[in-house]
Length: 364
Image (cartoon, rainbow, N blue to C red; front, side, top):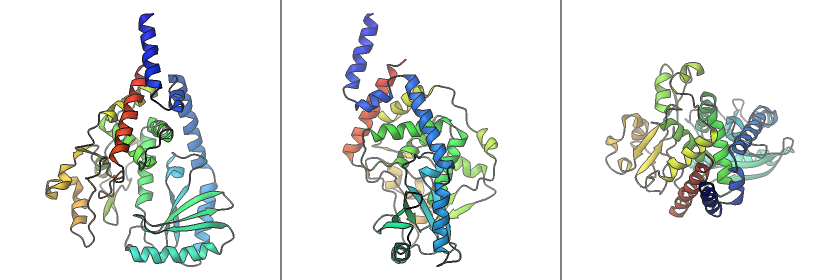
């Protein structure tokens, strides 16, 4: 009885420090599983319904009048299996066979292209609320598609984001618990609000954790397994997916624990993660010391050859290793997904991870 009373008291102390919706989410192992199943079902429903296809089809139809080579490619959470009915639709618009990033790459051309597309879509009855966002790392055109009621973000630079989404989907298909983990972490983060930690960055944290424990393979290993074909987009290697899913699964171990245990171990891993010295690197599936990005670049792992090559080009972009939190994009190795995260946000993130770990530990 004393042990039970102590456990109850510990849970109550921790619960007082967590947002009430998180305590409700974590109230039992059964509830965690039920919430995860509902989130996964909604995500798969969104993936399979016709709204994304209908919107993309109309976009392509309108823009084909300008360029006969125009093709549109949906990406993001609605396509990866991590979305919900309120998720925006992300679309890469290839205006002239530029999926691989060989045209329209400089900032001025992007601005001119987006302004031109904006004028055309403003005149179309099925599109509304067009807003060019020209100062972003990848400029976009925001709009609302009236027939499907979808908010859309259109980008025009290259297809790398489409490849990122394919990678996310592959991870889910290789290790189905990955989807539930990401959706639960995404839901958890939504109750707290971590400024400048995007849902994509959270997904990469989940994938990286699974990689470090053998439940997913590194991107570099995927390159090796699919080495007979190579796809290069704007100087970055991507995965050709020549090998079957079943063959790729042979290189990971299936997760056999409970979802609650996985959540607990995820939070424990990141509450103790040394962000001050380490970069989460999905390319390698292990940490890389941030000091390597700040010294002689030739000392970087050889798998980062595309990053080193990029730095010798006309418009080099250095990985922002001076940020408090560093998560490297799996393909665009110059991109720190959390470069804008402040120290206070990182402290808050790790504190919430610690409290969540301690709370879940009491459910045993």
